[in-house]
Every structure is written in C-alpha cells, then in structure tokens.
Image 1 (cartoon, rainbow, N blue to C red):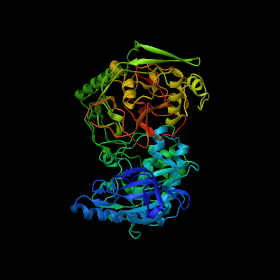
Image 2 (cartoon, rainbow, N blue to C red):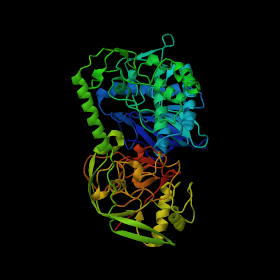
Image 3 (cartoon, one colour):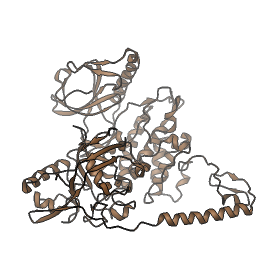
Image 4 (tube, rainbow, N blue to C red):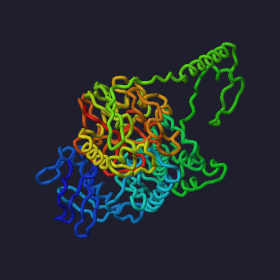
Length: 599
C-alpha cells in the first residue's frame, strides 16, 4: 500500500509525483520539492508483511501486536540507514538530504537520479562489452573504497542497486538497507541479524546464522555483478557452488585474462582467498602480465574435488597428482575394467552421433495470410488459430529460466493475426514519414522506437487502413513464438538450434539484419527469436497460477513487456518464455515491434 500521487508531505514541502517501487521494507516515490524547483526521491518505511495504512489519513499501523517489537527494530535500522548515507559524501553514492517522521512512520529524502539501474539496462541489452562493464565497476569500486574507509560494508552490491545517470553515464550506488559497521581492530563484524542475501551476489558467509563480515564480502558481490554484466546471466547461489551442487559457468572467451581472473578470484567461496580490499581487486583488473595467477593466491571458484568413478578411470596403473594437487590412489588394471571402459566409450560415441544430428528442416504450411498495402508498402499478417497452452518456463526452458517465468499457468487465446515479420523500416517510413533506426535499410526491422512511439505508429496505421492493429499481448506473443497449435515444443521460436532461426550475439556481427533471412517457426513467422526485441501491449507484472483466457496483464505498472531477444543478446535471452521490460519512453537500437490484427 503506497501513497497516492499529489499527496503532500511535511506541510507541502514535498509533493508525490508517482510511486516508483516497493520492497519488503519500504516504498520509494518520485516527488517535487517546489521551493527548490527540483525533483527528489523519498523512501518511506513500510513493512509490507506487517504494516497497514488508513487510506483516509495515510497513518501507518502495525497489523498485529506481536510484530510491534520487530517492526520497531526494523524502523530503527531504516533510520540508521538514512543517517549513514547522510554522513557519506561521494560522487558515486546517492545523497540523502533530509530525514523526517510523518504518518506514524519514517521518511528520508534522496537526490532523484534521472536514469535507470544496471539491472534495467541488462534487461534491454542482455550484457555489456568488457570496456563498458569495467567503466561502471570501477566507479562502484571507488564508492566502495570510500565506504570501507568509514569501517562500513554495503553487503548488497548487485546490478539493481547501481543506478546510472542518463546524462553523465555515472554509476551511483544506492540502497544501504543491509549495510553494517565492522570492527577495525579485528577487521570483522559479527552479527546474528542477517542482511539481505540476494541470490547470486551474496557470499556464503551471508547465509550463516552467525556471520563474520569483512570487506571481502563486498568484493564477492562486485565480482558477481561484473560476471552478470559480462554474461547477462545471474551467477548460481554461492552456497550451492561451495557445496558442489552448482558450477559457475565460464566467462565468454573474448573476455581478457585479467578480467576473467579477477572475477573468479573475487567469487572464491573461501573469503580468505578473495582480494581483501578494493585496491587488491583493482590490481587484478589492471594486471596485463602473461601470468594472471601470480598476482594473488586463489583460483576460479569450484567445489572441493569429489571422487568420480567411471570404467576408464579405474584402469590408471600408477600414482599421479590431480588438478587439485591431491594424489590419486594407485589402481590395478584389470581386463574387466578395460572392457567396460571400451564399451562405455563406444556407447557414448553412438549417443553423441545420434543426439547431435539435427532434424530435417520442414517447411511450414502457412496459415491463412492477409496482405495489407499502405502507401505503396505491403506486409503480411498470418492467422494464428486460437488454443490453450502452458505459459512460462516449461520443461525445455527450465535450465535457464528466470524467476519471473513462474508460476506455470494455463492460457486460452482466441484467434488473431500477427505480423509475418517485425515491422520494417519501409513500413514505418510509409506511415510515419521518418526512420529512427540506427542500422538503416528498408527491409531491416525498425528499431530505436519506444513503446509510446509504437502506439503513435499504430494509431496512424489504423487511421490509414481503417483496421484495428495493436501490439500483441504477452500471452499472444509467447503462443505465436511457440508455434501455436502446431508447436513442436522448441526452446527457441522454430528450433532447438538458435543459429537456424535467429540473429543473435554469436552470428549477428554486432548489428541487426534484414527480416525473414533466417528460418521461420512452425507458423511461418520470422525472427520471433533474435534480431530486435519486440514490444508487447502489457504492463510487466508477476504471473498468476490460475488458468486465464485472453489475459492482458496488470492494469497498471511502471514498465512494459518486450519479448524475443535481439542481435546483441546471448541465446538465453532468445528463448520463447524469456521476459524483458522497459519504461514507456525507453528506446534503443535493440527495440522494435510486431503487429497484431484482430479478425
């Protein structure tokens, strides 16, 4: 429950413009500071699980008496957070300018950052090149060096807590809700009150019920954040890696040895093996020597070795030292084990041959097609027969699925028409009279268009044709990408082999391509994976588990959905269930659209 736009605080000193976001412990608002003629951001203490608000008076109350003590403890922590940030003065740390009590709760006022978080930027670009990623990480390190000099730890470094100013491209660290002091005498902070353990970014010690924290905890999170920026993939939880249940996938081969080594060492499970200061971590990044491993003791994060028995391994006749420096026991070679090993090798080769053979390409039998002519430019709309499907991270998606692809839910859709291709630059020019695209070409997809731009385009197109075009709903887009009633259950739109159907990071040459130059999916639709992200009509929101018919998403929100991945993204982003989102006015050379026409 959050305050409504127009609400006044501090007797009219601040006026709420809009609700930005809510977390477990508070609401954040964009506000006007009329006396100064500037915008500010205000954070309100409000524990969603325990607090209520009187909609008439805006007074905040605690739902149950038994929770009052806990809420008061959290309230004190909220105020301490505000005071801690207020005491900091650094260009890469958000500035707190005011703290006050009102509505039976607490507020603090911050600079309004006109930009977006690295998390939101990743949703659009998929990943950063190494140069850009290091620009942001070095700025975060500058902020952390300053924070650590105050004997304080952040303990929640992640892309969502790093804002980037649009004009200056400056990274600004926010959200000190998990921040703690540590004892300079021992170098440690011991606490039974756990901070925020963001999966993928928190080191193993933050999961302990009685934790000792040092600056190396923040170093781990910086390494994990850099990993995410370079790959677009959230690292596995540190406790799962240290337990041997998960492995950290390798960084792309194009990443420099120095950067790769810095990431792996920073993400060591054992905190004693990580860089112990920001300067130590930067020394790894700055290393240009041939032997990266000589800088600091450590190695890429991996679980302790386990004994793995296979037929062939048992034929090793003598002692040897394995890659972890431990001696392997001497094995007695026997004819039985040798025969088992040969059999396994032959079977494995046969299985590889069978599973690596790609299926024959089958040309889809196209559904009914409607060809539309607008100012000399024609385009095709393909009929998609309605039906029912399971939306979200189905079995073929699970290995790379994100949390927002759950829960799985049944969706029934009516028949609709959808564009055979993404809207081309030729069609956009025929309707709008301009071409905003970065990579020019009549048969290329139009890009660098915001969701709001798409609405203007569609309004003009409808006026020219007398038809009712619109953006697809998120459900329609996923159903069509999956192949509708003709779906074969592919991971990507039309194939399990992305190179056949999509322009993406590995084959695009770092730019978009003309539409319909890869293979279509089961419905005859092109580029439903890759080339450019496609805006959907819906606001972004969490899925509901119950069955739905012709869903249109949440009634309101702060971001709109986009689907399909782009020429700059890794394969993971091009899956048929992968979701992305952006602000209404966000545009870039990865963003385009596809049309839907109701029968």
